[in-house]
Image 1 (tube, rainbow, N blue to C red):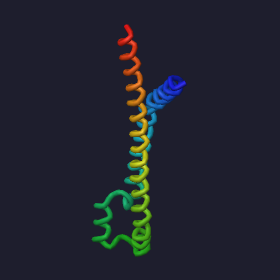
Image 2: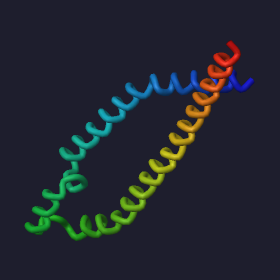
Image 3: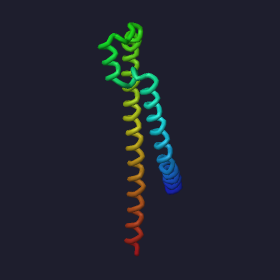
Image 4: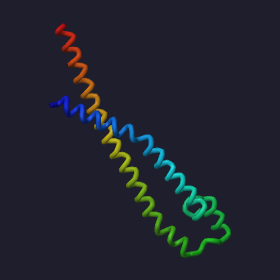
Length: 118
């Protein structure tokens, strides 16, 4: 029974790991495409030098500055949420690693038991 659960777990993890590279590459392409689009369409959102120059030239309207100030806490809170999700994901990864180690220890003890009986 335990062997079947371990085998299912390892098969599931193998499938997930084999999917990671294409998914990660697609996510990176999307992220960089979004960044390029933002640089072209709305440089105020991603280019601090552009913003600094616009402020020096008084080229930013008061409403844009007000909106930026209002959105700053939202962005900061969102970044905290993202970091929290990454930390929680780390707990999940460590939990899986502990399970892998338990499977390996169990297999090693079974191999040692077989060798001792020979």
